[in-house]
Image (cartoon, rainbow, N blue to C red; front, side):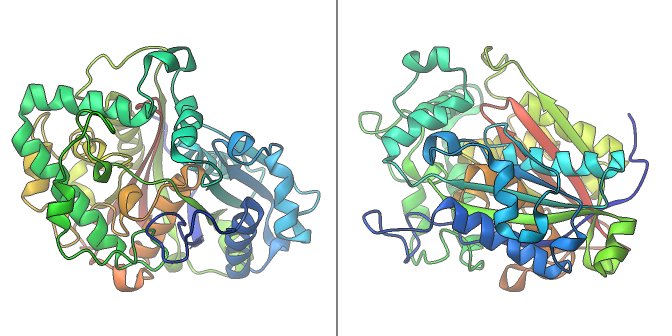
Amino acid sequence: MKTLRKKIFMVAGYNTISMGTGRKEFHPKKPRPDMEHYIKEAGQATLGMIGGAANVDEGVIGNFMASRFNNQANLPAFLPMVDEGLKYKPAISVEGACASGGLALATGIKSILAETADVVLAIGFEVQNTMKAMYGADVLAGAGWMKTRKEGHAYYFPGVFSDRAGAYYEKYGKETTRKAMAKWYCNAIENARLCKTAQEFHNKNKDLEATANAPMNPRAFVENLNYFDCSKVSDGASAIAIVSEEGLKKIGVEPKDAVEVLGFGQATADITAKPEVPTKLTTTQKATEKAMLMAGITVDDIGTVEAHDCFSIAGIMATEAIGFAEEGKGPEFVLEGNTARCGKVPFNTTGGLIGWGHPTGATGVHQAVTVWEQLTGKAGDAQIEISADRPYALSINMGGDDKSLVAIVYKRGE
């Protein structure tokens, strides 16, 4: 495995509010911010932390379906809207379904490695509340193979992961798995309550466990999941700067205020093929293995994880794909409290996709922002303790049904 031939850092992360049901500001029948608002807010905030647009060499935007949700394409040309100083600078947009944000990060990393840039501005965004959930589900189905759309559930991706959950129940037992999925939801909401930008920040439910254990209703939804097993429809954006050592000097930031990228892994699987093993996130495993191998670490070195829990069953299966638990033992790993914010390896410390929100094109960038905040002590009320013997963080951004993956290993800069 090739290792990084030069140091790469991420710094100056920023998240807008993840807007949608659950936020007090959200009302489906009232006007809401548009995509331009979110791109500009996130981009300008990061620029403000790195000395302005003059210091940026390149830009990259991650987005999944603006062409459908917002009737808008040609996204690179929105960067000069963020700041006139970005006019005429190179920019690119990338798409890989829900991994679009992670691909934006990977693209920026590769620009630094290619020495075409010392400072890359990476922005991820999605504005999805432009249509009703049923119609939006049809748009989001584009993350799967559309030739199978008519064969799929009306709520396409909840149906896909309901099938995975059903296979998991049958193979490893339903009762323990459901308990772990409920605990995953409770942890997500508890963490989101500590993060002011989280979609579930205002959640005051006093009995999260009862909510998490709401009965499944196949007639109204899907067979093996309830509504609370799912991430919500979200609007939002996240931004971060990806820089070289020279870039850090250029923007006037000390390494200790940045996170160093020690390894990253990309992996893709055939979108036209069904999972060979429905109970396993094989592509997630491959991407994570690549990232850890490049970084020269093992799973025992990881102190915190930002996992792609688009559904609670995906979070459970991620613990196994990373290597924290054997196949079928993910539920026990979660129920033992290992993934809680005070556990062995805190997962999704600001709520993850279920708690913080899932503006699809922003999610991978949001994960990096959360890691940067945690490793540099900037997470506020959501801050966890990073132990000296487990100083590394891992983010995993998944597109579709385990089809497009980006995994990144980080450590605080020195």
